[in-house]
Length: 390
Ligand SMILES: Cc1ncc(COP(=O)(O)O)c(C=O)c1O
Image 1 (cartoon, protein in one colour):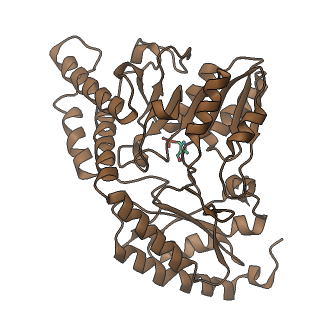
Image 2 (cartoon, rainbow, N blue to C red):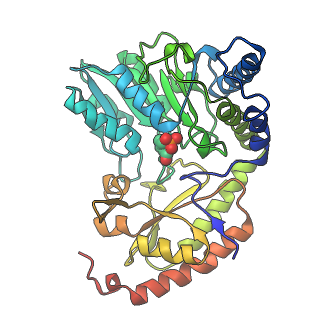
């Protein structure tokens, strides 16, 4: 059975060009980029070149790029590296757990956090960020694109508000990178996290933009790597892979690939909305369409359990995600959809379809054939159909 992978927001496969770029750095050029001999210098040159590429991707100076282990580390570094007891932190209730959990930990250390809620559309209102500000607010962190709905947040406006107030601004750009044009100067941020594995690069590597002069303390202490901002022997193959993936992502933004992907997503969404009792989460703000990344749609199918549908589709060769999380054995609805005001059953009945940039018309045709059948079948079987889901 051919599989159709529509879970690109969870992770993406490496592109062949990325594997080829990385290959020499596992074996022939295995040196430690901190060593002064030739083997080390070969690795150093590759890391320097990758740094230039990522600086171009961010639109920053080379010295403002810190390589790390990915999005979770970038997000943690922003929070633990800037906040001190007595500070106030503003973020949103729809962030990834890589922001929410550090915020909860900081509460134990005397940093209070305000979690700004989105509008029902999934959009954060910059006016709500402004209202949350206090004299002791030090850091604001807002994601570029939400991982569950794909909704793009008004980070440029929030950047201006932060600048006017003299506050630090971090963007979790893990889900926006490679999907929309990128520019840390235009965003007005001090810090911005990306992760390679969301853009067809390797897992366990990422980069953090740190604007010059930002008084960031390192999360990981040890050697003097990465201008003392992130200790640990640098992951040369991973960094080379990240840079190659970023180059290819930029190319895809320019050559029409992402526009084609948007059209494919729109066709998928329109087809899924033909299913009775289905609706999109995060598509409309009143009568206005919400800005979204091109590859994502999040759909509620009334009167069924999303998890059951994920399993049914998996058996038919389709990989998608539900928004729910399993906590202590109980299925909990997505915190993102709940924050948008969905009721518990609708949140539990939601699925995220996130397309790879290599998705085809045939992939969409197959999903549009299978999902309506699976939904109808589950509704026949499921006790939810009889209204027993509490
Ligand atoms: C919005 C967002 N932030 C952070 C992360 C964490 O990134 P990583 O997997 O590189 O640690 C993810 C991954 O799902 C994400 O979607």
